[in-house]
Length: 263
Image (cartoon, rainbow, N blue to C red; front, side, top):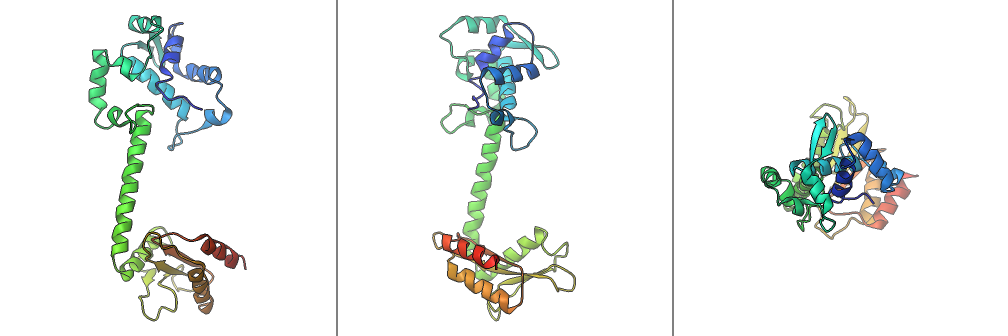
């Protein structure tokens, strides 16, 4: 298990006490000392630009620097300070954010960044994740809230509106090429079991048919609806279809779609 960044503060400080440390070398050394597996060493941030472990070591060093426990000597190098040595000399001291709040420099640092970082690092205030991770968590929470709100609005709207939204969404995703007129909703009457169609080519020879079910939460799409949609596709001699719902697909619906698709 990859340690959180606060758990890495003492090991980082201990290595800095031995002499000037290069951050890149320290990351490799600590990964060996902590017995990280290859998978843990290679686990990347969602951005794909840095490993999780490297990110946490960097943040541990950053916080130590802001508290005056280490100081930079040159690019990517640092050493321990007298304050840092005093911290290590106290075996009872747990070197973490709470410990470093006694230093004015660290409190000033937290005040500068606490609006979106350290005060909301975790729900319980333990601050075990890095500010980068806290930002990603906050961004994910905002997206989840937005998605839930949009879903509620779509469920409250008319079926015709939902059909139109799905057609527009799929065209925006690249289905039908770049033409905004490639997709169209067929409406509720005379649609022969389909709600929309997207032309994959200018002549409309290659088409994708759509079925949009505006179901309430807990009302899953069943196998019967999937069979009906496949039947509608067969009548139109279509080979491509997309079924979208505001709810979920039951296991039998998923199995039916898989079985019919393989025929």
